[in-house]
Amino acid sequence: MTDNPFHSLDSQALLVLDFLKDKGFSPILVGGSVRDWVLTGNLGKDLDFELVYQKTDGQFIPTFFDKIFKEIKRLNSFQVECLSLNVYRLIFENGLEMEFSPPRIERYEGLGPYGHSDFHCEFYAHLPFRDSFRRRDFTINAIGLRYRSDRLEWIDPFKGLEDLKQKKLKPCDPHSFSKDPVRLLRLCRFAERFDLIIDPLDFPLTDHCLKLLSFHHLMHEGKKAGTYRFLNRLMGLLTEGQKKNSFLDLTQFSWPSDDQSWPLKKEDFILDLLCANHLNLPQIESWEVYIGGKKGLITQYKDFFDLLKKLSKRPPVKELISSWKDFSDSSWAILLNSCFIHSLYPNIQVLERIKRYNPSLSETWIELKEIFQGRFSGMKAFQEMIESDLPPEQRRLAKLYCHLKEVL
Image (cartoon, rainbow, N blue to C red):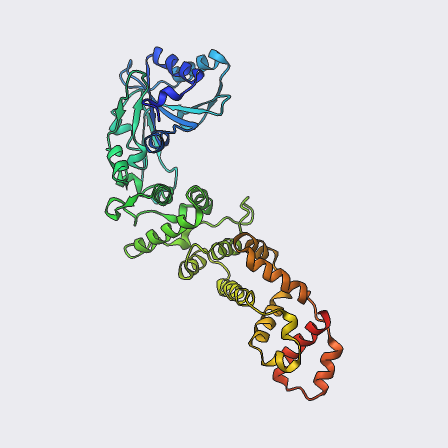
């Protein structure tokens, strides 16, 4: 870790920052890169700057901002992109990306409910940092460093450095935090990623409108922290929040419809939760109810996985069919018959997930499927057993026994 994060930037990045400084701007590095540098000493490749310009009365002039970045583009043929909200992105050959934006205030209008971007912005050339940083989600993401090479100049209006030290996750503005439902997901993500403490008194968890939160948001935020640990944390928050207010009802999640480019089906999502074995059964069943999955799907899968676990400890099948009496008296026969029924309805998605999460069970299933072959053999021997006054209650096992004798 260097004494100054700006010392780790290459000459091209410093050329841009020095140019902006010469033009009267004060670049303030803020957000996740500052947080990560404090925690790990690594500045990362995505840098966000708030550009403060003190030479006006505070009025932001978009044409002046645009003119400055056109000049930057001519400095060294930099790749410059103009994004929404007056954000300019510079992309460097070494993979570094720097985004610059003017100070702004985000205001929500009306009574709600509010979605992820239901606000309008007011842009300024300069603002008190407590005002311009207030739009950020957490205090640990609202720590700034003014660009200068001689020393560190921290800008920390919400005491994010102290919260990082104490491993606490706090909102910059509890009132606006509750207006963006995505921030509820980010709360879980950062708590899991950095092992931070959440004090429910700091967060108005009952005011988020999940109806305006898509399942894409859920999975996008989850994969950044480890999907199943993230879901476990989210389930805990929602369970706590539901005691206070019905807003936190996961049935309001907007699951992607068929015409949306989302590859994950509800059943596959539930199957992933079950196979990964990171959540307990009641938690998974809660997700099944919340997303409106096929009723009884979890029970069906769980019974099958339990069956495979038991059969993985069985003796060789050839030993079990040495005689009809030995086979019919064996407890393994009932288990094999259940597996035989499953083998008639192969599910490639199930097999792929078992391979991924539990290779030993996958081997058991593949071995048994090869024996069962998904079809019945041994019909002649089975007919002979029926003609020999075989009790009706034993015919299902007898059919399996004849099949195994035929194929083995």
